[in-house]
Image 1: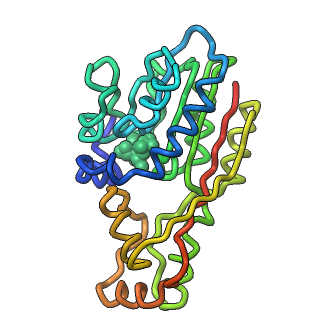
Image 2: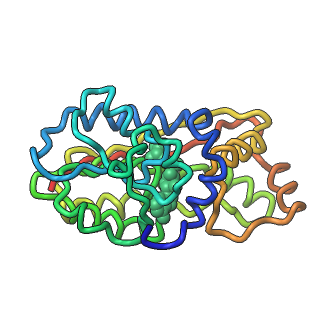
Length: 251
Ligand SMILES: C[S@@+](CC[C@H](N)C(=O)[O-])C[C@H]1O[C@@H](n2cnc3c(N)ncnc32)[C@H](O)[C@@H]1O
């Protein structure tokens, strides 16, 4: 590992045993990304890596859809990698803090995929540019990440309750598209909307976030009475919605 386990990874690590059962949305997006990636004409040489691979949902979906190349499973959580069937051999995994530059072994990659990880990093647009630069000519970047504008129901409840919104800040989609387009020929940039109803409305959603291990925030925590206020003002009849950016580009 290039540094101590990042706090976001430690949070996922504590819930690693539950991740696959809770990660319905992540599994669906992994399948869609793999479907798009499996059709790409990858350069014959150069490593392939899944960044923030976690339990391996993207790599497994790619395998099921016919990718015959080994996808290095890169993550900052040793616990999630231990739950990843594609990372059982030491040579198939890399424990790495993705806030840092990629190791030299991944320079000249032919495929870099990443799903639901970029939003956890300190400077997502700058990281995305770095990942694009690590591709060899003809190499592909295949990415999905939630972006700003997700969870309007949470932001609205916080405004109505007069408490801070502790949802993690998410990257701006336009900034990510611009960062990728500065180095890649974009084949696709698409915004997917996803929404789900929870019961009880706010509490059900927040419990699911915690069970998944995604509860780490870059905002200071609320007090118990602020939480009560927030839940009291949560819009009861509304589904919680995500905006997910899918980006595919070639170097
Ligand atoms: C929501 S999970 C997504 C896992 C997988 N890509 C999927 O789609 O199911 C986010 C992953 O990003 C990893 N992660 C978060 N911050 C990271 C960092 N700074 N360095 C490396 N991995 C990180 C977490 O450990 C976790 O495995």
